Amino acid sequence: MSKALIFISIFFIGEIIATVLFKMIQYYLEKKVNSKIDRAVIKGILERLFLFLALVHAFPQALIAFAAIKLGTRFIENENKISNDYFFIGNITSLLIVIFYYMIWNFFFNLS
Image (cartoon, rainbow, N blue to C red; front, side, top):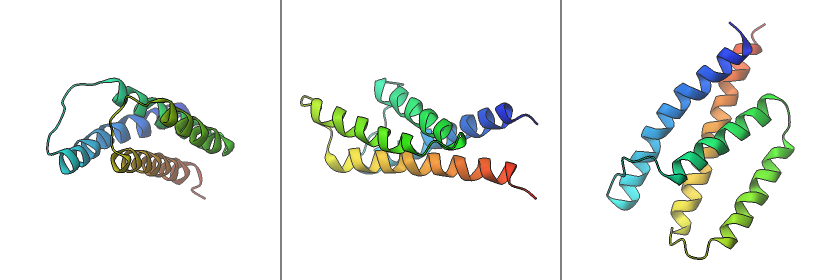
């Protein structure tokens, strides 16, 4: 199986699981579930894709860039009333998902 196909498979299956996980977190924190795909969902998918690509291609400095961008956009968004706990939980969960993707990737390509 090609590396690209494995990459896409890991990411696609992981994003389906991530969607369910984030809906569970949303229900736990807000006692509601939003079924529409909004800007935040698309941003999360793009962030995880960026981080997964960076880790697969051995570019860990992207984690620093990602953190700086997230911090910068957090300061700019004054009108956004999302709680700090929700923001923190969402970002940490997203990073853990990406690390899990990378662990699966390494499993496929580090078999000796």
